[in-house]
Image 1 (cartoon, rainbow, N blue to C red):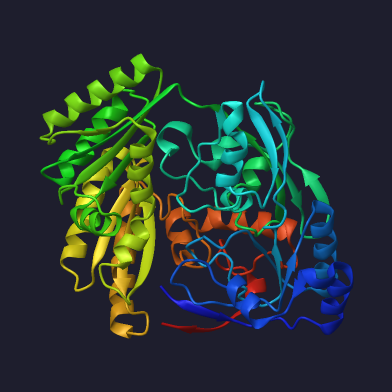
Image 2: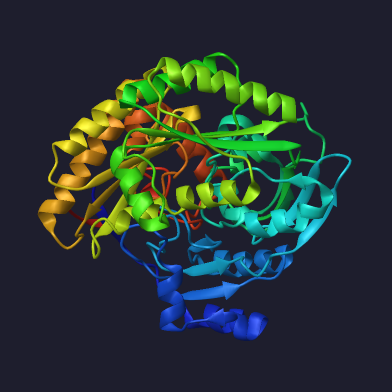
Length: 477
């Protein structure tokens, strides 16, 4: 992997003054604010914008975009900054549009199981609002991300095996296009055959085609019953084969999470738990009391066939919350294995029949490496993550981490998978796009990008390799 340096476009003072006149103290050029908005939670180097605007409405975003377009200055949308592949780095400078203050829940339609929110609403905020309605929004990437950011990166998470990803759960979008027009991609109907599916075009576009300002979402009824379980297995293959058979049998498990032994050790130490340090699965079942009992009994019988040790059940809400809180803190738990080190998180996704092979070979690579690595995954849909601990200032460690990452991706592609199941491309995985899709497919993506954003102003340097407008001026390793 290479870290590119891009020619920054000078942001004229006249643009800064015009934005300040429009927004007052909701425009910031303070160094600390710029630095915060130029970096996500990943290991990738920060690249701050020249100014940050805090928008309050779609119309305000449109006016900001029009001014930036008139001055040919780049635009980088920003939600909570919880992405992991350098998505928010202002590689060419420009204006960051922070939508975190656009946090209104605009409508909830209980009877139709849908809602409409502004892009800055977070998933936790939405579910808190929905609690008394008997509904919930299931997509859970771990971080308390904004709905706009989750849409832009096509996020998923622990519940995706049952409820799908953002792709399946976004009904409609309001988007400000690169020339400042406001468009709505669809209405509230659950299906439509009317024209191109623009909603899916913008879901996963990572801010390169426009600024998402409002999102229509599917909602679900809160299940009558929920139950969670943890069990350890003799080998990685035994754990993953349990997952494969469960999915192939059509059991509607809500969550199936895999933790390798080192990840279990990290979680135990960080969250004060006592799980056996072995390949481990976390399960969660949703449904009626009878349905949950039936699902759980079937999965337990399958797991026992593959040598699983006793299930630890969690049926009380506080016990389930403790279990999943520990899972969601796995990243920070892993960092504590070697305090002072940074983490390089990466993910791939493979067909579920290839999952055992992909995880086992990745674990073997990690065991042979001098670097410490943990593996965790939303394995119900073939998605798993490796966190590589390293000192980013040590060239040898960076080279080794990049080697491990590249081998992991190449293995996934060879097995019919993808270089990322949910982190997205940003600029961190840009080098793998042509390998995965082929030059002809990338050419179609470039054509779409150039048609909608001919000046190349929307989040330049991300998602699509080889755009002439980006003009890299140097590459360092």
